Amino acid sequence: MTIGVLGAGAFGTALAVALARNGAVTLWARDAAHAAEMHKNRSNARRLPGVSLPENVSVTAQFAKVAANDLLLLAVPMQQMAEFLAQHAAFLQGRSLVACSKGIDLATGLGPAALIANSIPGATPALLTGPSFAADIARGLPTALTLACTCDTAGETMQARLSTPVLRVYRTTDMIGAELGGALKNVVAIAAGVVIGARLGDSARAALMTRGFAEMNRFATDRGARPETLMGLSGLGDLVLTCTSAQSRNFRFGQSLGAATGFDANTTVEGVATAKAVSKLAKTVGVDMPIANMVEALVEQEIAVGDAIRSLLSRPLKQE
Image (cartoon, rainbow, N blue to C red; front, side):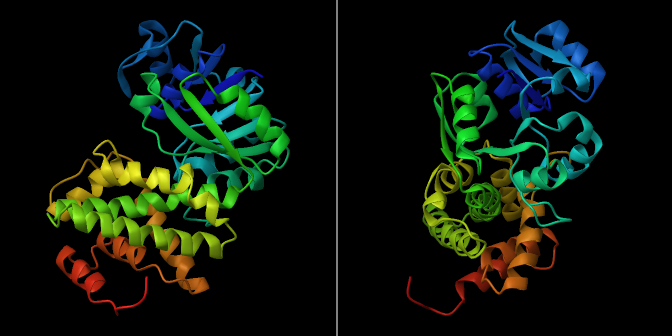
């Protein structure tokens, strides 16, 4: 099973580097000049500086060339996924398509693998998610991820191809749980960043993470997820990493909100769109999501940080 990676951002490049341990990988970049630069310099200095591309990673801007592989990893930002699939549908039929993005599409309310299933009915959709930073994967540091695929036989084949001596892949058939764990933890990470940015302390962050995890479980199980999935890498594992490291863009964005400092507008923060989508869905189905609602209100500048914190702390006392 040959591998192609669609998307030459930091995470797509890191996956190409890591999976080259198992064989040849084709990495596709949307920008032809970027592809030529990576091919010439054997690195992706724009997105993943300091990491060399192995010789068996070929870089191309020709979509047909990368789409010829059997197993395709889609390292495409969540809010661009639907358009990407529509644009390239003819090339993607009959392939195993593994989404590597986290979030909920604002237009449809669907996760990445569900978008694939809806857009490319002839493909086998899957999702690769869990606690990971691109720099760690590219440097060969030990990392564990979850591969979700509703067809366990196909999932087992993909699991074997995507695992390396230092990249350990577990699998599940609970696509809903894996999608929502990876999406919702970004919302909680923004809130955790707000706590630290506002100098409320690590104890407050721990409380926020705990209540945020309860919120994640409440929403995900209402949508049909299995609770044990949220307890695994794609839920709790990813939550811990994203809420405690400055490498997380969502956490850093939250810090900037809490400290009232600027943030790079060109940096993708998936938790922003997810907070909007989740708050809308939760209100529709009647699920209580105070942290997600607070994050959405902060992002939309409908509430000040101090007022948001007071609102959460003044909620009625109850049993845990």
